Length: 503
Ligand SMILES: Cc1ncc(COP(=O)(O)O)c(C=O)c1O
Image 1: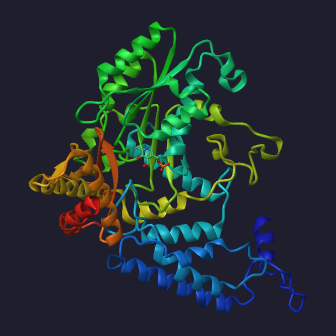
Image 2 (image 1 turned 135 degrees about the horizontal axis):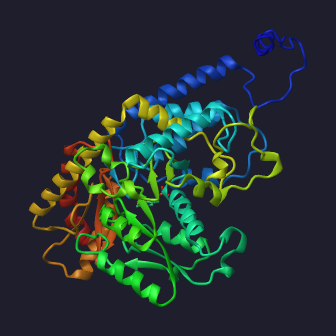
């Protein structure tokens, strides 16, 4: 019967000669198609030639004015708007697609990822739930990530905007599972004791923010000391848990890091898993940077213990280069994951048959209802390239970080500021003629000069009270020569930075 009805759809007549109605579709499909081909050509030209571009340049002030005009009441036509995009938007991008971008911790995207983002937008599926194929795609991407991380089959998960949201989801399930009363119904006022979470002081700030948003207060977020390698100190963790227990508080979760944001340090995850199982605590891993690093066989031993986590947050828009945004929250106990978030109003009742069917509704697994078809970017890119290639690219970045650190150590006027964790190198200029305070100012100036030169974009951090340049080499386009150019330019700019500081 369905085939018959589907067949008849193809015969539905177009209302030739009927009065046109307004829609958002083009009036002239042929003209739109030709512009769309031009868009693809221009975009691929940009991608193919991006090495020749400055990494970053500021948006000129006169162009910034274009972004302060009032809401357009009349349409300008897509040709005009695209021209404006080419002139005022495309040239002043962040630069994180460039081979010499090493700021904060970013992925570069990829041509396949960009095509997939276009296809997903054209499908315009809503991944809140329901029985449609995009749902299967997302479930498959989640299963692949769980497999790489080493979580067992049957673990739960969903794609998120990034690791901030993925950490929030993991920590929310932890709170739900370990709270002495049901926080969903009774709320925090009913808690008999303060609930405490532990993380090294190098842990990303989004975890503290999650705890604050839960209403648990950041006084219940213990920042545990790290060693010289910037990894969590286990005796300090154990002491803190014991102190809290004897003060009548309720420890409930430890966050381990698979790559910290400052230096890329990977905590001893197996040892933290031991503490958690001994103490009956939830083990959450912030793996925004390194959860997928096991794809590189030589890096796998570093992550030992991650497979014992109760929840893992990871980012696909970082080292996996899926275009922004794409993170994943993985939760081992699937039922707990669902029970933390599910809330189904009548109009979203899940059915067995029809479009409201489907075994997983992602709106049951996080705070969002409407959700983008992010999974297609990951699915197409991973199938196109294969996970082994990502492993090789990660290993190359780690080797490049070691290379850069060695070069830094050979330069008398540069100082390596921390052991290289995974692929992050922190260093600063230390000209003998300058005292400590001037050195901080010099390095700040040096970084800005470097970024303004358009040659390279590292970022910065402060380690042990000293400001330094931070080079996070999560870049599938970086060649070793790019790192040589970085250091040569740093050395060349140093006297200019010094005179700016002296002036
Ligand atoms: C270790 C770590 N956790 C969490 C985050 C936050 O991730 P996102 O920006 O994807 O929300 C970052 C971002 O750099 C990170 O490095």
